[in-house]
Length: 297
Image (tube, rainbow, N blue to C red):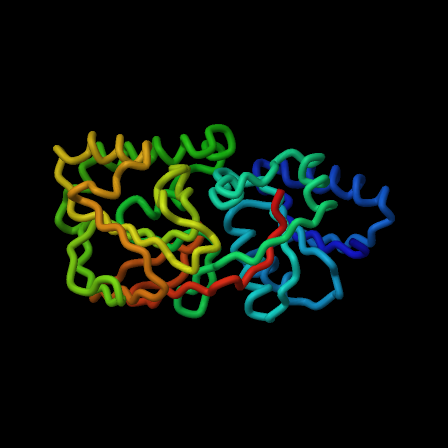
């Protein structure tokens, strides 16, 4: 590596990103590597930095899922298939955890020195990319309503706590929380009444390590999870199944793998991409096979 571009959110992980970047820069400097350091300040910065051609050999993304999403969108849209390495610093980091990417800076440095790369799939939702998950419906707004100090201290547990609060309020069982959707794919089509939908590229979603247990980032498919209308009696078994990854055969779960699916809805239902709001239904979701080159251990 002669030139490395670092794109970092300095406040990610309660400013641990800043400490990690400083440590990484010291390690790279010993190799006389040219370092392009880019700190984000507002939405869109990471995408813009990733789009710019600087003849770099590697793009390092340091931040949470939202920062990673922007970098992926920047690389994809500019058709710059530069190797990308993720130094996780956010609250949950589902995608990085699913690939067992190191959070420790020294281990991360060793990984990028080896430059073991692989082409992986990403998802396309309308005209925007996602690397890990697209979702909508009940509980998908928790990432926006959970207090930052709780996320920093508790990590994924903060999301579980907020989710439990919503369930105790009975929101999941109210008819106005249900979504009438029409799905169209080669594998399944028709009308469904659901509480939420999840479109996953990796097994880990929202801190649940096996939300999409059959998902693989190199299989050329997206994994679709539809949660049907829930009743109070369904919750204990469903939650237990979700934690254990045994929910595929649950009566309230529809699970399928597809390359292309369209979800239509007459209601105003927001779509979340990797933890960031990104438009509303209706939307088409497609896999982009091998569209991203990523550095792995």
